[in-house]
Image (cartoon, rainbow, N blue to C red; front, side):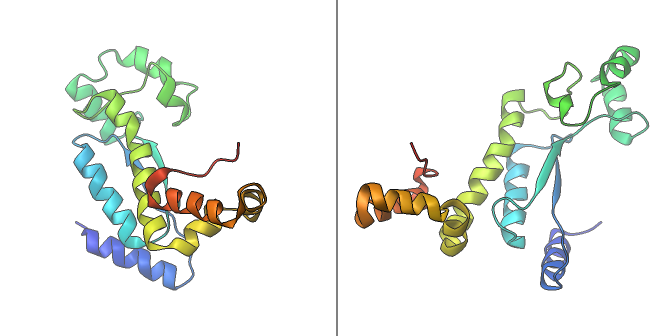
Length: 174
């Protein structure tokens, strides 16, 4: 079994070598909880790729896979023919809004669906506090800053940026 530290090392080594890599997360596997999602967030912070350098999808019971067999065995798929018909033309992300979606966790569905936002917000807060330069370059495009400077002056613009950095949210031009 691979340890978390080994994954962190591998991610850092590929980054140092200049190799493109992106963590791919599968959310909603059996046994996953909000606590395990928080462990994933800590892993994403540790590899230091930035707030949006990952991709995710939800667990999808594809026929012939162990997850499919688990769903049959545990009764999550009670009518195999009906399930197979329901996924015939689905893509994994189209699966989320379909009747075929299976919540493999013991968490309520709304909690499971909130995990991507939890990950994104946690990473954004972490990287905006620890890498101010990165945050400013990514979220305060020159045009937005110039707009604020022209409309509000330097002091109010700095206050707006500080509010965002300290957890007040992303600046929106209205």
